[in-house]
Image 1 (tube, rainbow over the protein chains, first blue to last red):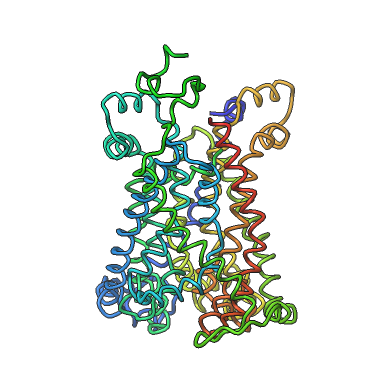
Image 2 (tube, each protein chain N blue to C red):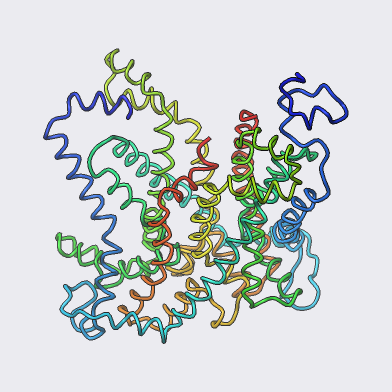
Length: 284
Length: 314
């Protein structure tokens, strides 16, 4: 509700409104057209595409590409692997990050701000500087080419950001809450578990929504720590599929749509939390 | 001070603390150290320790088996003479400006347009933001389909009478990088828009009202009144954009793998190729160190800004 809109409203006639909506409708249609095109393509038969071309108007309609990609293209397995990785990374990262944030925000730990900023900086490092040593360390520990490796490295890499955000939130909690906890003789663990975590629920939800899409969408760490196709998460599986099914456009389209659906569901279910999560750390 | 201090802390030895401090525990219990040190150890082990290792590896030559052989600065000297590295570096510069510039211009324009209480504004915002939810890898696949021969881009060109422009966008060395860039911007604009929308919400409307009364037109009001208030958001977006640009990997890897003829290679993809396709681990580490050196200034900018904001909050 800025003055711009107030000032604008005074002069804004029917023509202005019409122009506004026309332009934005065109922009939005253009924006959504790649997705729409892929959806259309996934619903056509192979023969239709081969005969009439990729960009032709659909003359067939079938859902057959979805089950086929799910079964034979490794999409089902990839989605399952992604779900496992995402579940463990998100819960463990948030657990560890909230512990660190609690310690840093509530206790007089020497150099706590330096520690916090160092942790945040670690999250901003270009991953390229970690790839080779991470692969070597995973090999040395005997976890190379296991989901464990993908999980632990993503936990380590994400921690800094989540700790930073939760630290900010915990600093903002009213101090009366903690005084009450002291009166009730709550120890640090009880204070953390029974008071701080429940109060942090909104920011934990925001971070969980954000982290779910980030981890689910990762490709780089999977390529770095995994080798066997059976363990690939969906992003890496798609990359393989692209080589194997190069001419089956409908299969490729269906597979990539299935990979896009889970994060999209999270986004639509938690849109508010998602956007507020994005804004933390950027909006100061 | 004693009356307002909580009884438990007031009873603690060593009086005379300022009230601001009273919210912090005084002695750090061992379990709290445990709370901090476990996550910290995980990050040190999986982030800082590997990062340090890369610096050392970059001064060696190593094929992955046996012992890494120290070679001093030879890898860096090789980089200077490597034409593919130079292409990748130049492409990264183009990428920072193209990817950053286009998404900032698009995101800012859309934020200003959609920062008003009008009908359907929420729908428009959601549509623009939607691609951000899709992974870089899937975005790359989507756009491979879009750019394919006989695909919608080429068909549309034909339809509007520009048929001579039809081509294999991703297989043509002259167009590959630009084609990937468009796909990446498509995904990024929504993110930048959301950041600017939040920034615009924090602007003081009375300043603009005053400028309007003084006869400033919309254009002047935007550049002279609104933009200065967005300085903070701009710094953050600038830092994020550069850091993101240097990290960009997935979308290029999925769409072109740096090809054709390395013409769409970025530093990140070239590093990955050297490391995992050719197993030149020392050389690849040197490229990683270059990426780090380019990013570190912007990382410091971002972190310092957050540290200052943190101090203001106290």
